[in-house]
Image 1: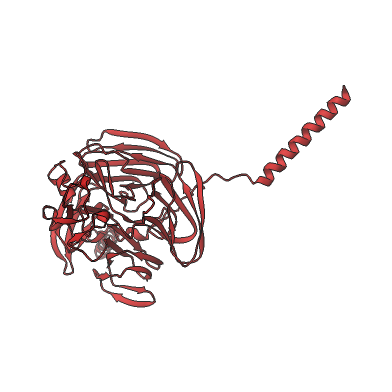
Image 2: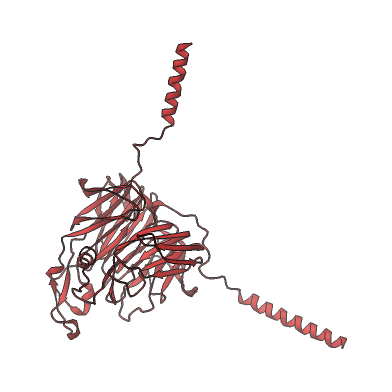
Length: 489
């Protein structure tokens, strides 16, 4: 009997141990990136008011590092940052909710960020960024006046890692109130939204109906928190169709992959800031890249009117919708990009989930594909087997890419080759970066999808035949009533 008792006790202990959670297996969230090698800017020979055709490299703007910024979405988030290849540890720290940590990374270096909880991870840098954020220095170095701000043109990830969510935490880099909206909130559902600063004070509070958008002007070098009762998307910065400098705020980036409201970057519904001021000789435009023939509609989100219908085939379709904000919806999945091929610069991220195939536009400059585990990718029909933490360069052009595991691609857009002397009439084609920035998605979030019941972007219009028929029936009814009344009288 005693042996049986001991046996039962041992069996119970083994069952309890088997049921206990295995604490060693902590889920990782991994973020990849590459710091541009060409962090510098140019200056004119003379004040720009006198107009000159030449420019020289401003040696004061040469920087030898960029910064990985990790913003805590949750308390006690453990972070490790590595240089790759080789997986060499650069920094290790713990960050709490609403806190942020900057880690310098040398130019031309690839890196890997590993967190045990989803975080908002950004890559930023450049002379303007360092003066505003590190030095708190508002004095201009080339254009503009005091009180500069630096806003990367990018969509932000939620506290759960995807681009769609109900709570977002991010860093604003501004020394003064910006002159235009730099944070844009797109509602996918009816929602009530509150915006908190780093002290917990509510600085904005408003309601949005589905497919509405709200622009915000937020200042301070501090973190903000956006909380919504419904699903939203949040973007930062403005699209640039001119020189990229708007009053006292610098929007960083003339290139951006837009995430889909259905999850990842290959989808059927996209939201974006746009502009009414497409300059006559402007080469900037939105570009729709479908994998197969489909139809799409472009909608003005402010006035909820259809701008145009679009037929999408094998060729990339270029769009310049005149509106403050737009939405694009297609019948079949596609990739949606903002790109200025002549005067653009900027960095942006895109990714594919396991089993996905898409045609992806790679701009002028550089682009790198990152793998988290052993992965087989097929690029333009050629299969390639890649090990974990591989960095694969991609050439300029539109490539058909498929993968059996999640991958992330970073594009660094700038015209090539870099000249020491340039034409001031195309100053915005400078081949370096005075500032750059983008929010980095975790490779795990790329395959996340959202089952939301989207409302129509444009209210369904009543067919003209029904309207005419209804009016005609009403007229007939009135005539009959009048006839009967006359007979009774």
